[in-house]
Amino acid sequence: MTKQMLTENNIELHQSFETKEQAIRQVGQILLDNGYIKETYINKMLEREALVSTYMGNYLAIPHGTEDAKTEVVETGLSVVTVPDGIDFGDGNEVRVLIGIASQKDEHLEILSQIAIICSEVENVEKLVNASKAAEVIDLLQEVN
Image 1 (cartoon, rainbow, N blue to C red):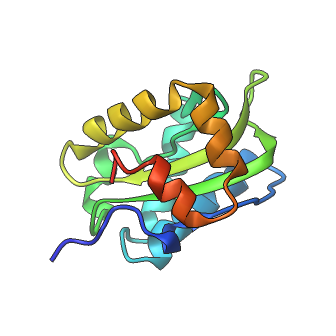
Image 2: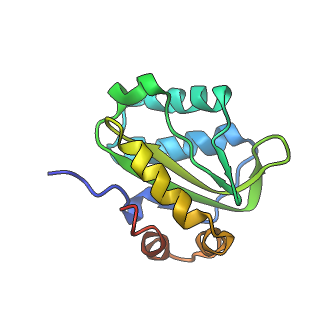
């Protein structure tokens, strides 16, 4: 039986971080704690970030592993962390919502596409940032799940 990609256990609201590395590590830790990835995947997320920023615009970043990290994925899953005060992702880019992705095969392309559609409207990103319950996040991202 496959797990749901996004559950309330995969969401942390109203967090605060000093660096983007801390934020990415937390997004990965949620995936690890809930059985979606092996621990080494978190380093692959940081490697990806070093190659090219996962900042997508509209206060959104989508950290995910490098191409060779698929073997570190146990089950396809998402994690969501909101940072209302924002985190500097470099080049003047502020991130308030991080959505971590761990996917098997090429599923990440479809997942990225769905997230991009939802978060292309800054109002939806603001709703994620202002969510007071994990269930609100799940409702907003139901197309992805």
